[in-house]
Length: 452
Image (cartoon, rainbow, N blue to C red):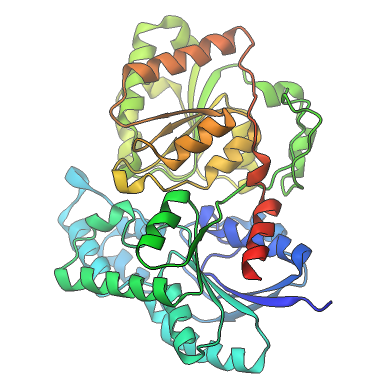
């Protein structure tokens, strides 16, 4: 039987690094197993905030990749203010950390580039793809955002080709994302953002969300929304992880070296290590955690002797400076950005894995993609975000850790000390459960069923 074809319009594609590239890279890997041939449309000359050459090996062999050039204003923005490099990753200074240049840059970003600075790729892409779609039999077009300007490519193609089946995939919300309120939007700019978002919701055949709450919110705003979370694509040696379901198997791997790790590497380190893997910006800074750890190091000599705080990725300079000015300064191991494979290894060599979300209620539906790879390691997870968050639901269902609000304090210390005591006695068990539903292959099967 001839495979159906899906054209995937994505800004992030290897060698891009970070979480934005993972979702459709993995869908593209497994879609052929379910009767679909993926074709990638991506910029020829993108300006990526992070590069990870190791992800190139995950690109399926012989996959068709179509590219056109893009113009982006980031080089001009970076000349105005070096901190604007953060914009490419959705980061910027907030509150007391904002200089006048930061404030100006944020205002320009929010009001001149709607919905984002990749908007200049929309018109030429629509012109190119309209012709491409007429000359090639494509069954479905999918757009992945952010950048949400890519959804405008889908919207304009849908208007020109009404019978086109279009999937709008929102890896993060648009106007409901926490930093949206920090963009210093004028009333007319805010209205334009919301009008464009509404048009996408109402014209896309299907809107994909990465969390249960986002899907619910999208439906309330007129979208035909379905939730397909992110997931993991890791084969673990479940026996060496002492999993209760040691006879079960997890889907195939892109990180084969995990199978070659020794038992001591998998089950712990010489120090009790709490690790954060990924990008940490000021809007998701768990200051109450740093305060709890600072207190524990100061008051508990045994804890201080054995504790290590590890960062893998890009940590905001101001957050790092704050921690270095505390009792934690001699306990920090900052490895910087590592390849995805090496980041997975660092997860494995940790005892507790940290995940943070934006603190406001509107962010309770955000499920950071790294949580699924955290789950696949079997390690305990400590999470921060709003009450009743989707992350909390997942942690409870999988028995993988505990979720805290940004107002918690003493309960954080109790959780960490409990895990520390278990670690010292050699009983910090890795006993997550019900995680197979989040394997990339199972999620791709769900996507294929939606595609029809």
